[in-house]
Image 1 (cartoon, rainbow over the protein chains, first blue to last red):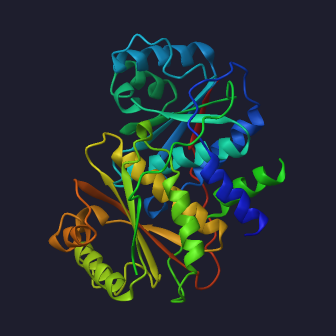
Image 2: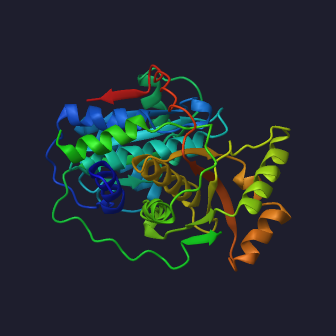
Length: 178
Length: 178
């Protein structure tokens, strides 16, 4: 493998979902790179059905965390694990591939972050959040029209401690028909 | 940015969906690398709900193509655009995140392929295929049990001609709440 192949392959294999973060903010230029990578995810017919909302505002981040915890029915303090940045990915439901499209955006965000030395994790319940008035109010505030479904939160921050090691891959992940 | 950051960021931004392939086969070791990258996609609670079926057998690939065209209701000769390899990603429906999980596997496959100089495209209608007896027969032949839903086909091959250029990203892809 050449160096580019190595770098990308290693990034794909060494990315981990991180559940402990420092509160330090992230540099805006790096966040912009990560979000740009998100916009280049493949989408069905290149219709670019997703959108991303990057939240660095602490008050809003904390309110969203509380809402997420409430949906989870948990009293755990912070489903975002202390991460200072939350990127919400939503996708427009009128496109039949919206759910797949939004997922690929999430994947690009997590991988770009990892390449930049920033930890990430997919946090769910975005779907439920944006079915509630609190979620809809965020979209309205941003002037976003159309029927969007929450796909996921990509939480971002510097990892607290070492990256977790990968659990073994399951047996029977890959089959060949040659 | 350092070299690793550059390599990954560039790969994320320069990957394209390719719709014209040479029929040349792909080296098995490279395919194995690509599939390995797929197994390291994030999955909900790390439950690894997806599986991948790598099809290099021309007869089966052609039968699958014909089935896909039939579902599409099209007489187009080959929905796999001549690509010699088709990796089918399915995911087990008992896990609530299965659809997101399978999509992330697709994303890893497409990106790893690109890093290795191999073109790819997500081809849909895997869901419909594996609801049909023909699809179920493939799973049965492989001894795969459980309720799996088809997520997508990642077609792989050497691009015929140049990679397509990226269409412009839409306005309003990214919002900030700072």
